Image 1: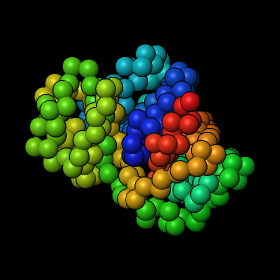
Image 2: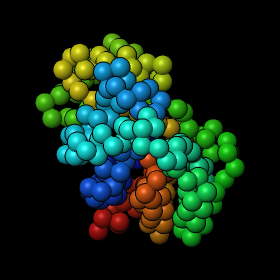
Image 3: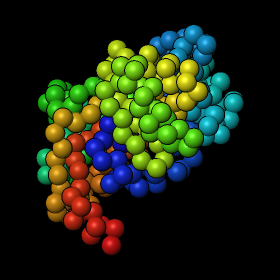
Length: 250
């Protein structure tokens, strides 16, 4: 849930989804293909591709899979071109949701995303009716292991980052889109290799869910959207109150 508020409150959902290795490989393959499509297949000349490959290797993605994803992006394997599409919608209680999809079949993806929304207390919205509630930012994730928050903060702030959020597992750095490459390069030069680097949608104002039933519905909708095979990322503005969260975890 990149760009989501209070990561620790809902990261068990993301962890369960990403724990399925096939899903992880699929997302890295999509990211590698898109990066190769946009910037070429040479990782030495394409920072986004290099970051995607490094992330894939860190998750033990086979070399053949990586090479196939690059060739798909550059068009060497033929087939339908991959397109990036963002769907906007609302969930239970009016929460705002944006779903980023990478697909070679737009009709299939549109139908599936709409089905997930409508069957789980949500609805698809017209383009632009949800996105104005989010700010587009650059996001860089660094493992917390061996990298102190103080060191990371000093490095990224000097490079022009806006904010850093840390938990025991990772540091998440936010910056203006124009500063993404500079901040990522500063971290790499300081010996702190980013685990991921991407553009995210950060909610301007959180929508706090107090009701346990509504919280379950919102998490269920998020999980299904995130678990869809073509989904790259899901951004939403909901938070779960401490009281509701305690009941969910009880």
